[in-house]
Image (cartoon, rainbow, N blue to C red; front, side, top):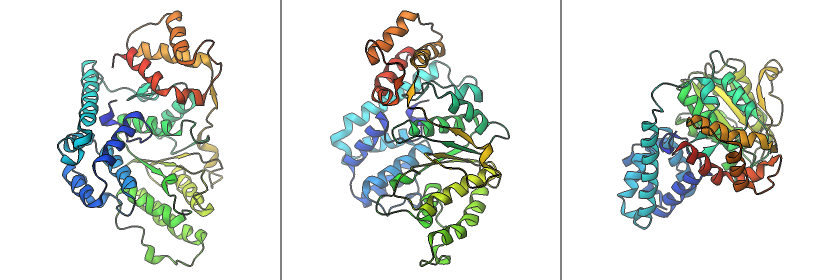
Amino acid sequence: MSFYDEPFDPNSARGSELMEIAIVGIVDKTSLKRLVVSVGVAEIDINWDQTVREIWGDVLERVARVHLVRQFLLAVEADDNFATVKQRIVALRFACDAEVAAEQAAGVAASPPTLEELSQTTLVGPRPFVNRSTLRHNLVSLFGPDGIRTMVVGGPRSSGRSYTWVLASHVARRFANMATTLINLSRFTDTQANPVDVAHMIANSLGWTDWPDVKSLDPSAQDATNARILRPQLVRRLGSLDPTCLVFDGLDGSNLTEAAVALVGDIAAAAGNDELGECRVVLLAYNRAIPNPNVDPFVLREPLASEIPLKEVKQYFVDVAKDANTKLTKAQVNAFVTELFGKPAPDPVPVAAMRAKAAELSRVARGLRGV
């Protein structure tokens, strides 16, 4: 999948480059609003009551979600505000165009992949997916016919949670034609987010402008009271959506009140109880039980490992080569491992080492794939 079709991830190499290009070009909201409209994104779809960098994050998430990344690059390439970074824009666009051309030449779209094949993806854009066998199995259950509606992924920050969002989004959109929305609660940093704040973030992420009706809430009421009022309203509204996968991240931070985390848990419980129709809910770093004892035993779970067996890393290179109809020798595999992790390579490989070598791992994998 090319960068043009990926969800926006500011932590990826290309996502970071796109964000830095954006913030260099325009730093005032008035100019940014004009650009957003010219690209084809409705002004009302963006939460403008944020810092410019945060607004840019929302803009790029929306642009990627509606598959307008290439149009965006063409627009900023022609905009004088971005003159100092024009070469970077052109380089990014050329690289992405080449990626699309290579995929088309390889016949990627010739026959739709199965759900099982998508779940075994070795590369999503530039991101390498090593191991994660439980996640892959869970995605088949999550998006299959009459699939389980709720999934929880544990693990601390920097343990691969953003990769979970990317792979889940990849499978949801390409197999189930299901919209995906990332609601990253870690972005709420000014004070602790309460249930009303969470409701606003959900509404902003989904483009709702008429909800929540905060006038119906008592500002002096306790958080738990407001959560009880918001929960049925939110469940009804989400249940009326076209099939959507909601991914909540940042649930392990001190920036959320207990009632705010509980409200997100209630949304996941509602999905698992078939109250949200065909919608799915994925919780990242939610290290507790789902608040419905009838739902919790059936929730898909993946506790993130802190290390990966070296044989799984080696198998990854074999799988990538197989995708390109190539067979690697044992010596070739060992050479790749030595290039990345030294000799002798650690066994198991710590997740921190995998994260540090992600760009190099991607380079090797993309080379094997010929992209």
